[in-house]
Image (tube, rainbow, N blue to C red; front, top):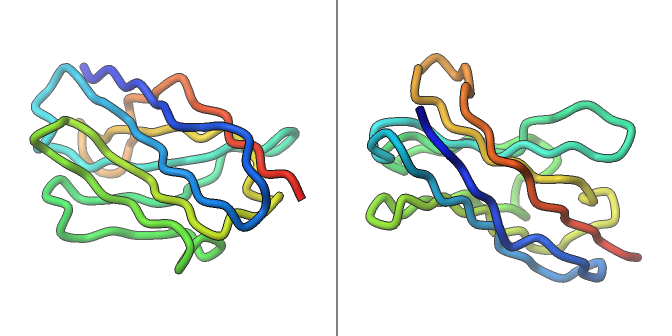
Length: 119
């Protein structure tokens, strides 16, 4: 079982940057992929980005490509999401997810951190 705790959200203006962090505990962090999802008010949860266990490969949703970067530090059991050029439509609760069972099942979730971007 994996426990996840996100931090780093807040209220920013359009064009600003934020870095979200997610610290994992439980199973060996370097053995599973990690991802970020988000859920805007009144909408379903959507995929943002993912990264393999080694950090050697990452994948992004089309709407964040070029603006967001996912990374991980296996020595710190932490995955990051650096968000640049934020837009009001990026306003959402951001969740990190872990894939300890494999197959992109994302079986473990954090509690979420709120990101609000004002225009």
